[in-house]
Length: 328
Image 1 (cartoon, helix red, strand yellow):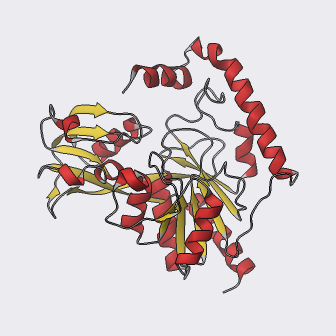
Image 2 (cartoon, rainbow, N blue to C red):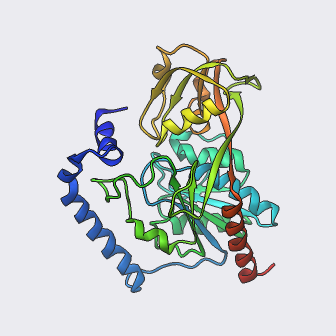
């Protein structure tokens, strides 16, 4: 991980006082975002309403909070209830110049690692494009979806939404609760009181409605059907909070010999693994970027999201309300 990222994360999460140096930039960031929200609220900037319901799954902080496994779980739940869900996503790190329907054989560098994983695992149509409105309209034109999930779309106010769900990292919380770049927040904590459901990943938080656990299932080889039983492994991760992945691997029974962490969304090459012994264990999100050069003893750990009873009940109520609003 780069020194720049490490220094910033120390400011955000380890009570470093250096964040004071960045506060003027945070005040400017806060002013700009407040003006932007007001323009949408006053109707000066237009918001677009689709013919189908929209569920936003997002966060108010940068870094990983578990949105992808939650979105996969939400897709499955919607399918079980008779919906035909589709997903729109930015395609972070990819140079997407037009709305693009993600296929299972796409390359992560062209569509983004998270959208590719969502397409592979959910079986639902996924469209990537930074403009969420255009992405959603293209999704409706190209498929028969009747409900749309906007992945990481909380701050994309141009797309009106029926339900807002926010994921928070239960281990790191909101850090020093400062806005970028002095802290990890895109919006202040007050924003949580305006959304429909706040879910904490891994452990309870006082301002969350419930808890989500990531349950490991199997470690699968990247280029075969082979699985890896609990054993000693070398860990690789390029996600927002690699510590959580390490904890999940331990929960699954693996012993970690070596850890190598990269910045979130890092585009892997074979050279990144040249000095690492095997077997290698990585996240599913990282695995979709490594399949073309993976070796036989490289594995990814599959995880499934599971909500506690409180969060599951509140989510069920929200979906029932959607059904009553939009009909059978």
